[in-house]
Length: 482
Image (cartoon, rainbow, N blue to C red; front, side, top):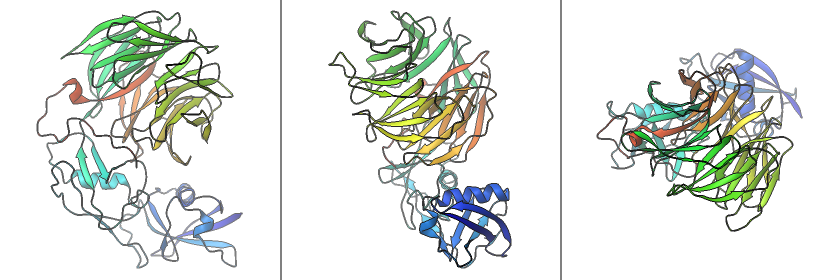
Protein backbone atom coordinates (compact mmCIF):
# COMPACT_ATOMS: atom_id res chain seq x y z
CA UNK A 1 0.00 0.00 0.00
CA UNK A 2 1.48 3.34 -1.10
CA UNK A 3 1.42 6.45 1.09
CA UNK A 4 2.68 10.04 1.04
CA UNK A 5 4.58 11.39 4.03
CA UNK A 6 5.10 15.11 4.64
CA UNK A 7 8.09 15.81 6.86
CA UNK A 8 8.31 19.13 8.68
CA UNK A 9 10.51 20.71 11.31
CA UNK A 10 8.72 20.39 14.64
CA UNK A 11 9.68 23.79 16.04
CA UNK A 12 9.06 26.02 13.04
CA UNK A 13 6.50 23.95 11.13
CA UNK A 14 8.58 24.43 7.98
CA UNK A 15 7.89 21.75 5.37
CA UNK A 16 11.18 19.97 4.75
CA UNK A 17 10.14 17.43 2.11
CA UNK A 18 7.37 15.17 0.84
CA UNK A 19 8.21 11.54 0.01
CA UNK A 20 6.25 8.61 -1.38
CA UNK A 21 6.62 5.39 0.59
CA UNK A 22 5.19 1.91 0.92
CA UNK A 23 3.38 1.17 4.18
CA UNK A 24 5.35 -2.09 4.50
CA UNK A 25 8.66 -0.23 4.65
CA UNK A 26 10.42 0.59 7.90
CA UNK A 27 10.90 3.86 9.75
CA UNK A 28 14.60 3.57 8.87
CA UNK A 29 13.67 3.62 5.17
CA UNK A 30 11.57 6.72 5.73
CA UNK A 31 14.42 8.40 7.60
CA UNK A 32 16.81 7.68 4.72
CA UNK A 33 14.30 8.87 2.12
CA UNK A 34 13.82 12.16 3.98
CA UNK A 35 17.55 12.64 4.37
CA UNK A 36 18.22 11.97 0.68
CA UNK A 37 15.41 14.18 -0.59
CA UNK A 38 16.13 17.02 1.84
CA UNK A 39 19.89 16.75 1.34
CA UNK A 40 20.29 16.49 5.10
CA UNK A 41 22.11 14.17 7.47
CA UNK A 42 20.31 11.01 8.61
CA UNK A 43 20.76 12.09 12.24
CA UNK A 44 17.14 13.05 12.84
CA UNK A 45 14.38 12.04 15.22
CA UNK A 46 10.96 11.28 13.77
CA UNK A 47 7.80 11.87 15.76
CA UNK A 48 4.16 11.09 14.96
CA UNK A 49 1.66 12.62 17.41
CA UNK A 50 4.45 13.04 19.93
CA UNK A 51 5.49 9.38 19.67
CA UNK A 52 9.11 8.54 18.91
CA UNK A 53 9.39 6.33 15.81
CA UNK A 54 12.09 3.64 15.99
CA UNK A 55 14.03 2.44 12.97
CA UNK A 56 12.86 -1.17 12.91
CA UNK A 57 9.13 -0.41 13.07
CA UNK A 58 6.93 -0.72 9.97
CA UNK A 59 5.17 2.40 8.75
CA UNK A 60 1.80 0.65 8.77
CA UNK A 61 2.23 -0.09 12.48
CA UNK A 62 3.35 3.41 13.47
CA UNK A 63 1.33 5.87 11.38
CA UNK A 64 -2.42 6.43 11.60
CA UNK A 65 -4.01 6.92 8.21
CA UNK A 66 -5.53 10.41 7.82
CA UNK A 67 -8.60 11.20 5.74
CA UNK A 68 -6.61 12.96 3.01
CA UNK A 69 -4.13 10.10 2.70
CA UNK A 70 -1.12 12.25 3.67
CA UNK A 71 0.81 11.35 6.79
CA UNK A 72 2.61 14.01 8.82
CA UNK A 73 5.93 13.35 10.54
CA UNK A 74 7.69 15.90 12.75
CA UNK A 75 11.46 16.08 12.73
CA UNK A 76 12.81 16.98 16.13
CA UNK A 77 16.42 17.48 15.13
CA UNK A 78 17.90 17.42 11.69
CA UNK A 79 21.61 18.04 11.29
CA UNK A 80 23.22 20.30 10.19
CA UNK A 81 20.90 22.27 12.49
CA UNK A 82 22.17 21.09 15.89
CA UNK A 83 20.87 24.20 17.67
CA UNK A 84 17.26 23.37 16.82
CA UNK A 85 15.35 23.15 20.09
CA UNK A 86 13.25 20.10 20.81
CA UNK A 87 9.47 20.61 21.22
CA UNK A 88 7.64 19.53 24.39
CA UNK A 89 6.59 16.30 22.69
CA UNK A 90 10.21 15.27 22.11
CA UNK A 91 11.56 12.23 23.99
CA UNK A 92 13.42 12.87 27.22
CA UNK A 93 17.12 12.34 27.72
CA UNK A 94 18.52 8.90 28.44
CA UNK A 95 20.82 8.91 31.48
CA UNK A 96 23.51 6.21 31.44
CA UNK A 97 26.06 5.38 34.09
CA UNK A 98 29.16 3.74 32.58
CA UNK A 99 31.76 2.06 34.77
CA UNK A 100 35.03 0.23 34.26
CA UNK A 101 34.27 -3.45 33.66
CA UNK A 102 37.39 -4.63 35.49
CA UNK A 103 37.48 -2.35 38.53
CA UNK A 104 33.84 -1.28 38.84
CA UNK A 105 34.94 2.36 39.04
CA UNK A 106 32.18 4.81 38.06
CA UNK A 107 32.96 6.97 35.04
CA UNK A 108 30.19 9.48 35.59
CA UNK A 109 26.77 10.12 34.13
CA UNK A 110 26.21 10.41 30.36
CA UNK A 111 23.08 12.11 29.01
CA UNK A 112 22.01 11.52 25.42
CA UNK A 113 18.81 11.36 23.39
CA UNK A 114 17.29 7.97 22.46
CA UNK A 115 18.12 8.37 18.78
CA UNK A 116 21.66 9.51 19.34
CA UNK A 117 23.96 6.80 18.01
CA UNK A 118 26.25 4.33 19.68
CA UNK A 119 29.07 6.33 18.12
CA UNK A 120 27.99 9.40 20.12
CA UNK A 121 27.78 7.31 23.30
CA UNK A 122 31.22 5.81 22.68
CA UNK A 123 32.72 9.27 22.20
CA UNK A 124 31.07 10.57 25.40
CA UNK A 125 32.50 7.63 27.35
CA UNK A 126 35.93 8.02 25.73
CA UNK A 127 36.16 11.60 27.07
CA UNK A 128 35.82 10.22 30.61
CA UNK A 129 38.76 7.82 30.28
CA UNK A 130 42.40 8.73 31.02
CA UNK A 131 43.93 10.68 28.14
CA UNK A 132 47.07 8.53 28.07
CA UNK A 133 45.08 5.36 27.33
CA UNK A 134 44.84 4.30 23.69
CA UNK A 135 42.79 1.91 21.62
CA UNK A 136 39.08 1.53 20.89
CA UNK A 137 36.43 1.55 23.61
CA UNK A 138 34.09 -1.41 23.95
CA UNK A 139 30.64 -0.95 25.50
CA UNK A 140 29.02 -3.86 27.31
CA UNK A 141 25.39 -4.12 28.36
CA UNK A 142 25.31 -7.17 30.62
CA UNK A 143 26.83 -9.94 28.51
CA UNK A 144 26.15 -8.14 25.24
CA UNK A 145 28.65 -6.17 23.18
CA UNK A 146 27.23 -2.98 21.66
CA UNK A 147 28.40 -2.18 18.14
CA UNK A 148 26.91 -1.03 14.87
CA UNK A 149 25.42 2.01 13.13
CA UNK A 150 22.32 2.07 15.34
CA UNK A 151 20.63 4.39 17.82
CA UNK A 152 20.60 4.02 21.61
CA UNK A 153 16.92 3.09 21.43
CA UNK A 154 17.55 0.41 18.82
CA UNK A 155 20.39 -0.96 20.97
CA UNK A 156 17.94 -1.42 23.85
CA UNK A 157 19.39 1.29 26.11
CA UNK A 158 16.97 2.87 28.57
CA UNK A 159 17.10 5.62 31.15
CA UNK A 160 19.13 4.71 34.23
CA UNK A 161 20.95 1.75 32.72
CA UNK A 162 24.51 0.89 33.74
CA UNK A 163 27.10 0.16 31.04
CA UNK A 164 30.45 -1.50 31.48
CA UNK A 165 33.43 -0.20 29.55
CA UNK A 166 36.59 -1.91 28.29
CA UNK A 167 39.52 -0.10 26.73
CA UNK A 168 40.72 -2.47 24.00
CA UNK A 169 44.24 -2.79 22.71
CA UNK A 170 45.20 -0.60 19.78
CA UNK A 171 44.81 -2.33 16.43
CA UNK A 172 47.34 -3.40 13.85
CA UNK A 173 46.55 -4.73 10.38
CA UNK A 174 48.24 -7.25 8.07
CA UNK A 175 47.73 -6.90 4.31
CA UNK A 176 48.69 -9.44 1.63
CA UNK A 177 49.43 -8.27 -1.89
CA UNK A 178 50.19 -9.38 -5.42
CA UNK A 179 53.42 -7.36 -5.08
CA UNK A 180 54.90 -10.43 -3.28
CA UNK A 181 54.75 -8.87 0.20
CA UNK A 182 52.78 -8.89 3.42
CA UNK A 183 52.79 -5.53 5.21
CA UNK A 184 52.02 -4.67 8.83
CA UNK A 185 50.33 -1.37 9.66
CA UNK A 186 49.40 0.63 12.74
CA UNK A 187 45.63 0.67 12.27
CA UNK A 188 45.17 3.68 14.56
CA UNK A 189 47.72 6.00 12.90
CA UNK A 190 48.03 4.42 9.44
CA UNK A 191 51.81 4.13 9.66
CA UNK A 192 53.72 1.29 8.00
CA UNK A 193 55.40 -0.93 10.63
CA UNK A 194 57.15 -3.57 8.54
CA UNK A 195 57.24 -5.77 5.44
CA UNK A 196 57.52 -9.54 5.09
CA UNK A 197 58.81 -10.52 1.60
CA UNK A 198 57.01 -13.62 0.28
CA UNK A 199 58.77 -14.17 -3.04
CA UNK A 200 55.39 -14.75 -4.70
CA UNK A 201 51.90 -13.27 -5.05
CA UNK A 202 50.28 -13.39 -1.58
CA UNK A 203 46.61 -14.30 -2.00
CA UNK A 204 45.39 -14.80 1.58
CA UNK A 205 46.47 -14.67 5.20
CA UNK A 206 45.37 -15.33 8.78
CA UNK A 207 46.98 -14.66 12.16
CA UNK A 208 46.51 -16.87 15.23
CA UNK A 209 46.95 -14.89 18.45
CA UNK A 210 47.60 -17.73 20.91
CA UNK A 211 50.36 -19.34 18.84
CA UNK A 212 51.72 -16.06 17.35
CA UNK A 213 51.68 -17.59 13.87
CA UNK A 214 50.87 -15.96 10.56
CA UNK A 215 49.82 -18.16 7.63
CA UNK A 216 50.13 -16.78 4.09
CA UNK A 217 48.63 -18.48 1.04
CA UNK A 218 50.70 -18.02 -2.13
CA UNK A 219 50.10 -18.19 -5.85
CA UNK A 220 53.03 -20.65 -6.24
CA UNK A 221 50.82 -23.39 -4.68
CA UNK A 222 52.43 -23.16 -1.21
CA UNK A 223 51.63 -21.82 2.26
CA UNK A 224 54.25 -20.04 4.36
CA UNK A 225 53.99 -20.24 8.16
CA UNK A 226 55.63 -17.30 9.92
CA UNK A 227 56.19 -17.35 13.70
CA UNK A 228 56.70 -14.34 15.93
CA UNK A 229 59.17 -14.10 18.79
CA UNK A 230 60.11 -10.45 18.97
CA UNK A 231 60.29 -10.56 15.17
CA UNK A 232 58.94 -12.68 12.34
CA UNK A 233 60.75 -15.68 10.88
CA UNK A 234 59.55 -18.25 8.35
CA UNK A 235 58.91 -21.40 10.40
CA UNK A 236 58.12 -23.66 7.45
CA UNK A 237 56.64 -23.87 3.97
CA UNK A 238 53.76 -26.25 3.27
CA UNK A 239 53.98 -27.80 -0.20
CA UNK A 240 51.61 -30.25 -1.86
CA UNK A 241 48.96 -28.29 -3.75
CA UNK A 242 49.08 -28.23 -7.55
CA UNK A 243 47.36 -24.90 -7.93
CA UNK A 244 47.49 -21.44 -6.32
CA UNK A 245 46.44 -21.42 -2.64
CA UNK A 246 43.57 -18.94 -2.40
CA UNK A 247 42.52 -19.32 1.24
CA UNK A 248 44.00 -20.33 4.62
CA UNK A 249 42.39 -20.82 8.04
CA UNK A 250 43.65 -21.83 11.49
CA UNK A 251 41.77 -24.28 13.72
CA UNK A 252 40.63 -22.85 17.04
CA UNK A 253 43.63 -24.21 18.96
CA UNK A 254 46.06 -23.11 16.27
CA UNK A 255 47.56 -26.58 15.89
CA UNK A 256 46.09 -27.27 12.43
CA UNK A 257 45.76 -25.26 9.26
CA UNK A 258 43.34 -25.63 6.36
CA UNK A 259 44.21 -24.48 2.84
CA UNK A 260 42.02 -24.17 -0.23
CA UNK A 261 43.53 -24.27 -3.71
CA UNK A 262 42.67 -23.85 -7.37
CA UNK A 263 43.68 -27.52 -7.76
CA UNK A 264 40.06 -28.28 -6.66
CA UNK A 265 41.11 -29.55 -3.19
CA UNK A 266 41.36 -28.46 0.42
CA UNK A 267 44.09 -29.79 2.69
CA UNK A 268 44.39 -30.12 6.45
CA UNK A 269 47.91 -29.67 7.87
CA UNK A 270 49.58 -30.37 11.20
CA UNK A 271 51.58 -27.32 12.25
CA UNK A 272 53.63 -29.37 14.67
CA UNK A 273 55.52 -31.13 11.88
CA UNK A 274 54.04 -29.76 8.63
CA UNK A 275 52.40 -33.07 7.61
CA UNK A 276 49.31 -33.13 5.42
CA UNK A 277 46.72 -34.89 7.58
CA UNK A 278 43.96 -35.10 5.00
CA UNK A 279 42.96 -34.03 1.51
CA UNK A 280 39.34 -33.11 0.74
CA UNK A 281 38.22 -34.01 -2.79
CA UNK A 282 34.78 -33.40 -4.23
CA UNK A 283 34.78 -29.95 -5.84
CA UNK A 284 34.90 -29.80 -9.62
CA UNK A 285 36.64 -26.43 -9.82
CA UNK A 286 39.04 -24.22 -7.87
CA UNK A 287 38.50 -23.43 -4.19
CA UNK A 288 38.15 -19.79 -3.15
CA UNK A 289 37.61 -20.15 0.60
CA UNK A 290 38.06 -22.46 3.60
CA UNK A 291 37.05 -21.99 7.24
CA UNK A 292 36.58 -24.13 10.33
CA UNK A 293 33.07 -24.58 11.73
CA UNK A 294 31.55 -26.46 14.66
CA UNK A 295 30.69 -29.40 12.42
CA UNK A 296 33.93 -29.62 10.43
CA UNK A 297 35.65 -27.80 7.57
CA UNK A 298 33.74 -25.56 5.16
CA UNK A 299 34.92 -24.90 1.61
CA UNK A 300 33.74 -22.55 -1.16
CA UNK A 301 34.39 -23.08 -4.86
CA UNK A 302 34.12 -21.64 -8.34
CA UNK A 303 31.95 -24.72 -9.05
CA UNK A 304 29.03 -22.80 -7.43
CA UNK A 305 28.94 -24.80 -4.21
CA UNK A 306 29.84 -24.57 -0.55
CA UNK A 307 30.51 -27.89 1.20
CA UNK A 308 30.81 -29.06 4.80
CA UNK A 309 33.39 -31.80 5.44
CA UNK A 310 33.26 -33.72 8.71
CA UNK A 311 36.64 -35.04 9.78
CA UNK A 312 35.28 -38.56 10.43
CA UNK A 313 33.70 -38.97 6.97
CA UNK A 314 35.04 -39.19 3.43
CA UNK A 315 32.25 -37.38 1.60
CA UNK A 316 30.72 -33.96 2.21
CA UNK A 317 28.00 -33.82 4.88
CA UNK A 318 26.09 -31.26 2.81
CA UNK A 319 26.55 -29.09 -0.25
CA UNK A 320 24.91 -25.66 -0.57
CA UNK A 321 24.33 -24.93 -4.25
CA UNK A 322 24.56 -21.40 -5.69
CA UNK A 323 23.62 -20.00 -9.13
CA UNK A 324 27.17 -18.73 -9.72
CA UNK A 325 30.73 -19.08 -8.38
CA UNK A 326 31.14 -18.86 -4.60
CA UNK A 327 33.91 -16.43 -3.66
CA UNK A 328 34.16 -16.83 0.12
CA UNK A 329 32.80 -18.71 3.14
CA UNK A 330 32.86 -17.82 6.84
CA UNK A 331 31.35 -19.34 9.99
CA UNK A 332 30.00 -17.93 13.25
CA UNK A 333 29.10 -19.85 16.40
CA UNK A 334 26.09 -17.58 16.87
CA UNK A 335 23.24 -19.93 15.98
CA UNK A 336 25.76 -21.96 13.91
CA UNK A 337 25.51 -19.86 10.77
CA UNK A 338 27.53 -19.75 7.56
CA UNK A 339 27.83 -16.79 5.20
CA UNK A 340 28.84 -17.06 1.53
CA UNK A 341 29.42 -14.46 -1.18
CA UNK A 342 28.51 -15.20 -4.76
CA UNK A 343 29.02 -14.04 -8.33
CA UNK A 344 25.25 -13.63 -8.70
CA UNK A 345 25.41 -10.31 -6.73
CA UNK A 346 24.09 -11.83 -3.47
CA UNK A 347 25.23 -12.82 0.00
CA UNK A 348 23.63 -15.88 1.61
CA UNK A 349 23.20 -17.05 5.19
CA UNK A 350 23.02 -20.82 5.80
CA UNK A 351 22.33 -23.16 8.70
CA UNK A 352 25.78 -24.56 9.48
CA UNK A 353 24.42 -27.94 10.57
CA UNK A 354 22.10 -28.71 7.66
CA UNK A 355 23.12 -26.41 4.81
CA UNK A 356 19.60 -24.93 4.68
CA UNK A 357 19.35 -21.44 3.17
CA UNK A 358 18.17 -18.96 5.81
CA UNK A 359 18.55 -15.50 4.29
CA UNK A 360 19.34 -13.86 0.95
CA UNK A 361 21.07 -10.47 1.33
CA UNK A 362 20.78 -8.13 -1.64
CA UNK A 363 22.20 -4.76 -2.60
CA UNK A 364 25.20 -5.39 -4.86
CA UNK A 365 25.02 -4.55 -8.58
CA UNK A 366 27.81 -7.01 -9.44
CA UNK A 367 29.96 -9.87 -8.09
CA UNK A 368 30.36 -10.07 -4.30
CA UNK A 369 34.03 -10.77 -3.56
CA UNK A 370 33.89 -11.58 0.16
CA UNK A 371 31.58 -11.61 3.18
CA UNK A 372 32.38 -11.92 6.90
CA UNK A 373 30.57 -11.95 10.24
CA UNK A 374 31.28 -9.41 12.95
CA UNK A 375 33.05 -10.92 16.00
CA UNK A 376 29.76 -11.22 17.90
CA UNK A 377 28.07 -12.81 14.89
CA UNK A 378 25.30 -10.20 14.72
CA UNK A 379 26.35 -8.28 11.61
CA UNK A 380 27.50 -9.25 8.12
CA UNK A 381 29.81 -7.10 6.02
CA UNK A 382 30.53 -7.82 2.37
CA UNK A 383 32.41 -6.15 -0.45
CA UNK A 384 32.55 -6.61 -4.18
CA UNK A 385 33.44 -5.69 -7.72
CA UNK A 386 31.79 -2.26 -7.44
CA UNK A 387 34.46 -1.21 -4.91
CA UNK A 388 31.93 -0.71 -2.11
CA UNK A 389 31.11 -2.52 1.14
CA UNK A 390 27.68 -3.17 2.62
CA UNK A 391 26.60 -3.98 6.17
CA UNK A 392 23.49 -5.96 7.22
CA UNK A 393 22.04 -7.22 10.45
CA UNK A 394 20.88 -10.84 10.65
CA UNK A 395 17.29 -9.92 9.78
CA UNK A 396 18.54 -8.91 6.34
CA UNK A 397 18.17 -5.14 6.86
CA UNK A 398 20.82 -3.17 4.97
CA UNK A 399 22.36 -0.80 7.52
CA UNK A 400 25.05 0.96 5.53
CA UNK A 401 26.76 1.16 2.14
CA UNK A 402 30.18 2.74 1.91
CA UNK A 403 30.77 5.44 -0.69
CA UNK A 404 32.80 4.28 -3.66
CA UNK A 405 36.28 5.40 -2.69
CA UNK A 406 38.22 2.38 -3.95
CA UNK A 407 39.22 2.93 -7.57
CA UNK A 408 38.95 -0.75 -8.53
CA UNK A 409 37.45 -4.06 -7.42
CA UNK A 410 37.32 -4.55 -3.66
CA UNK A 411 38.87 -7.95 -2.99
CA UNK A 412 38.30 -8.69 0.71
CA UNK A 413 36.86 -7.42 3.99
CA UNK A 414 37.88 -8.02 7.62
CA UNK A 415 36.40 -7.04 11.01
CA UNK A 416 38.48 -5.80 13.93
CA UNK A 417 38.13 -7.79 17.17
CA UNK A 418 36.11 -5.02 18.85
CA UNK A 419 33.56 -5.08 16.02
CA UNK A 420 33.75 -1.34 15.38
CA UNK A 421 36.03 -1.25 12.35
CA UNK A 422 36.22 -3.04 9.01
CA UNK A 423 39.09 -3.08 6.55
CA UNK A 424 38.47 -3.38 2.82
CA UNK A 425 41.22 -4.20 0.33
CA UNK A 426 41.29 -3.49 -3.37
CA UNK A 427 42.97 -4.15 -6.68
CA UNK A 428 43.80 -0.42 -6.65
CA UNK A 429 46.67 -1.25 -4.26
CA UNK A 430 45.11 0.22 -1.12
CA UNK A 431 43.34 -0.84 2.04
CA UNK A 432 40.73 1.36 3.70
CA UNK A 433 39.63 1.32 7.33
CA UNK A 434 35.98 2.18 8.00
CA UNK A 435 34.31 3.02 11.31
CA UNK A 436 30.95 1.27 11.02
CA UNK A 437 29.27 3.49 13.63
CA UNK A 438 30.30 6.88 12.22
CA UNK A 439 30.08 5.34 8.72
CA UNK A 440 33.27 7.09 7.67
CA UNK A 441 36.60 6.06 6.16
CA UNK A 442 39.18 6.70 8.88
CA UNK A 443 42.39 5.67 7.12
CA UNK A 444 43.70 4.89 3.65
CA UNK A 445 46.76 2.61 3.64
CA UNK A 446 48.98 3.10 0.61
CA UNK A 447 52.36 1.56 -0.18
CA UNK A 448 51.69 -1.74 -1.94
CA UNK A 449 52.81 -1.80 -5.56
CA UNK A 450 50.05 -4.11 -6.78
CA UNK A 451 46.59 -5.38 -5.83
CA UNK A 452 45.91 -5.94 -2.12
CA UNK A 453 44.21 -9.32 -1.85
CA UNK A 454 43.47 -9.84 1.85
CA UNK A 455 43.73 -8.31 5.32
CA UNK A 456 43.45 -9.38 8.96
CA UNK A 457 43.45 -7.41 12.21
CA UNK A 458 45.54 -8.15 15.28
CA UNK A 459 45.93 -6.34 18.61
CA UNK A 460 49.11 -4.31 18.50
CA UNK A 461 50.27 -5.59 21.89
CA UNK A 462 50.20 -9.17 20.56
CA UNK A 463 53.16 -8.18 18.41
CA UNK A 464 54.83 -6.08 21.10
CA UNK A 465 54.99 -3.27 18.60
CA UNK A 466 55.01 -0.82 21.45
CA UNK A 467 55.03 -1.56 25.17
CA UNK A 468 52.26 0.02 27.19
CA UNK A 469 51.44 0.09 30.87
CA UNK A 470 48.27 0.64 32.84
CA UNK A 471 45.98 -0.81 30.21
CA UNK A 472 42.79 -2.58 31.22
CA UNK A 473 42.53 -5.94 29.44
CA UNK A 474 45.53 -7.64 27.84
CA UNK A 475 43.52 -7.88 24.63
CA UNK A 476 40.19 -6.80 23.33
CA UNK A 477 37.43 -8.81 24.97
CA UNK A 478 34.94 -10.09 22.43
CA UNK A 479 31.60 -10.74 24.08
CA UNK A 480 29.05 -12.92 22.27
CA UNK A 481 25.63 -11.62 21.48
CA UNK A 482 24.11 -8.17 21.09
